[in-house]
Length: 81
Image (cartoon, rainbow, N blue to C red; front, side):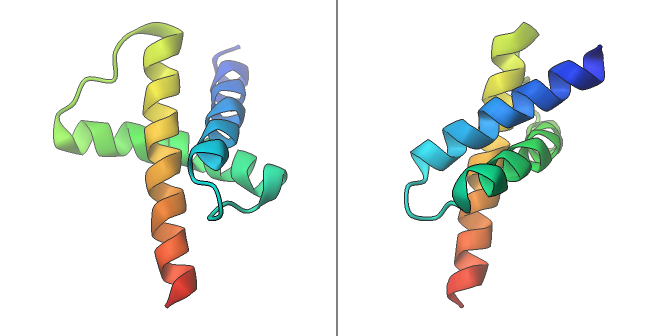
């Protein structure tokens, strides 16, 4: 069940990141994939920075969205160069 929740949070995070980063997304499916990867990246990034991701669904969603936005930003920089 936890894996299913992880995927659902990643899906929502990818969609939200795509909405926040207008013009630097990869379409709906691409943003969803970036959201799932961003959820993993966000957890790692928050851990490295020593930031608690909060508890429950909201904390997980915030962590995943931040990770996906940072990932989309980085990919956008690489794409432009």
